[in-house]
Image: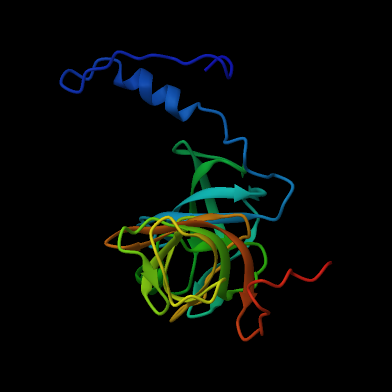
Length: 239
């Protein structure tokens, strides 16, 4: 890829394999995603798991922000509302060992745990890795658009999908106090995350699923576990 205005075109054949190697090289050499932030704290999201010959935990990850270095001390989770510490043993980018990767990169990390086999069963796609354990949230407020043709009502449960993470949530409230809204209703909602709290960021786009996508929205506020929250119509306090 020469510049942002150049769109390469490849003629490939799945049957003969012609030019597949050329396409693979082009994909591996794509620049990092420009929307990611290098200056913010380190954050990775888990996209897959594996196993090394030595039995260590192998994770396929996407670097959301910051710079990951080979000497980094990481915490991973959440596991039942807490994060576990681990040592970064090795780091790979495009199947090659590297010393560091920056925001926007897809990489493979090898972590050293005393119980790697147990950890492999516990790790789920969408878990995150940080340098320091962040706050976890059990209530979410968001600006939302209802897509379900049958409408939605307070008390329904859904699967929340945000930033690669999935959680079970319950719809607690609409901002106008109605018990039920129709399709294409727009406004603020409050969600309760149950069983396992979540790490998320304000401004993240999410969807709610119940077989099909029922609602989409943007997170406006997050509330830590056990924190009292104000009315949906009340502005957040000035910092």
